[in-house]
Structure formats: structure tokens, C-alpha cells
Image (cartoon, rainbow, N blue to C red; front, side, top):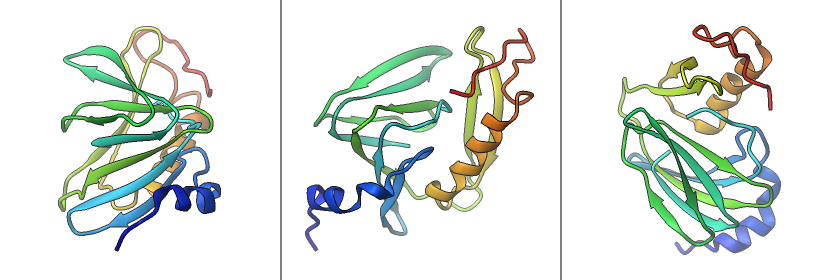
Length: 161
């Protein structure tokens, strides 16, 4: 059945709320399609990205090197598997993310890096079945705890943003 994404956004933009700003549009045995709005309150590290409205920034860790990949309005980007990434979305932006369905027993990782020395500050692993509901408590737990945001290597405390 055809799907009018622009109409859906106009009628449902209120569903794209922080900190995840995510709404599942389609969930099948093979893949998940999500509408994602901005701004988001994430700085952890999905997949196929289509930037429908406005621009976004995809921060990745590639071979131990931190890189920024701008994705402009109406552009698509395919991220290879197992690449740590952080989608940074700005206010009044909307994108579509397509992810593969996770096989039983596979783990996703939410990971935060020290803003001073780039050491991993905190990581939590889980089997992802519902991105929209599973990310929020992990993100809230991280931002609520100064201990979790403190780098064990250099002592820097990442901000709550």
C-alpha cells in the first residue's frame, strides 16, 4: 500500500519527541523503518539513512578515528555494519532510518566516548527489539549519573548536554 510520508509527518510530528525522537513506521521479520526527528539529545554511538527535511551529521568511529559525515536534505547514506555511530539531528529536521531486524542473541551497544581523550566512558549492551522504548532509559541513566559520565582514564566529566 502506498504511503505518503509528507502527509504522515504533518499529522504525526508530535510523536517525534526527545530524547530519541523516534517512531517505528514499519516492523517486519527482516527490517525496521523509523521516522526520526530533531533535535535529539543523544551523543552515543542504525544502517541506512535518508534525510527528508534539513541536514544532519553522522559521527562515526572508523578504524579508531573519529569522523563527521554530513548528510544533507534529500541525501541518503548507507552505513556499513558494526561501525560505531552517533546520528546528530538538528531542530526541525526529519529523517528515515532503515535497520535490519536483529537476529536472536545479537547485541546492540550504546557507547559514549570521553570528549577530552576519546576513551570509552560508558557502554551498555542489549538485544534490541524496540529502539523507541529501549534507548530512552539507557540515555536517561547515563545523563543522570556523573559517575557514568566520568572518564576513568583522564577524569573528565562529560556534560549532560
